[in-house]
Length: 426
Image (cartoon, rainbow, N blue to C red; front, side, top):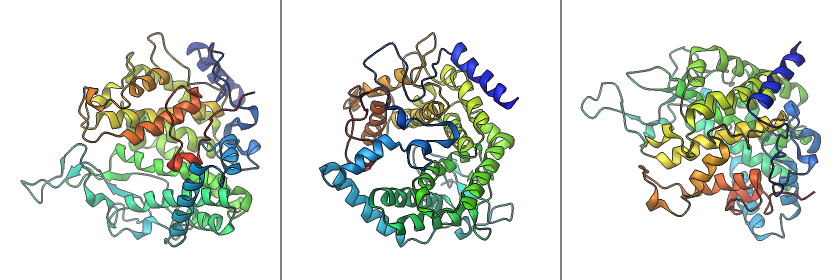
């Protein structure tokens, strides 16, 4: 019955929304858009494991990383990026694994295992030191990144796991895999230190709210952790029982996302928060081996997100009202790319979807790409022009629709994620 339901949902996506079953292999009438080689295809809840020597990743692709690894020392850009990676990995080896138990403020639940953070753009009221916080959009309150809360710890945990796992893949030293495993155990698995699978008290606003739906966004830090676990898979640093326990943890978090008032409110958001919810939900559900949950979110994505949040011009109107409108336009499109990648894992193509008004990921990408190097022409408010963020997005777009469709950046961290020629020819 479950398989029949999955096939029925897929049929709705294919027929009603005009999508193809190409997955990452982009089905299109334009014969110049070549699909990646078959071995790099993401295989549903198994991710890239069948093509990646058992490494169960969902974003890090074997055809890309293996080609980069082959030129690790001979390609100048890759060699520089690798040297920086190892420097950061060595620093991460010295870090104490982060835990929700480290914060100095106790959540209202009385359980320190509950994640706690405060909202980034809310500040003490200058007119009333003891009054409710007031909003200053685009200006981050540094208080959120103190030891009082978990925001710094979750960010470091995610960054260290990603860095160390890449260092293990590219360098092969077991110490990096072992440290990655220690980080994951501490945050998710050790009963003494593990986070409870909820974000009920995330992005609280003192004097106003004890936690907000927007706080679900904090847990997008887990996306790179899942791929880190996949990268170190062949090392055995995390045992099979531990990986299974981690899958169960994410299954419980998926249940919280879908069943709690906080999660349901975030899912209903009509701006980047709603798209980020889908990005997390689809990957976490696949990792938890619940593909039907991911498939349902993907099926609903054109109607729930593209039809309501994308303009036929390519803009995302809800993001244009912000003081950092260009940044948030990128920030909303990035998780839409994530959903497209997870759709590919299920044999569905969101990259090339467009509705009858032309709304879709490609149109939104072209809208932003047109302002590369043209900051003065952007007609909306932007406090700090995010040139590097745009280049990162377009490098990913070049993988999706390229090569040569968009300007790419083959330096820095991206040099270790996307090969200089992003697609293999058949």
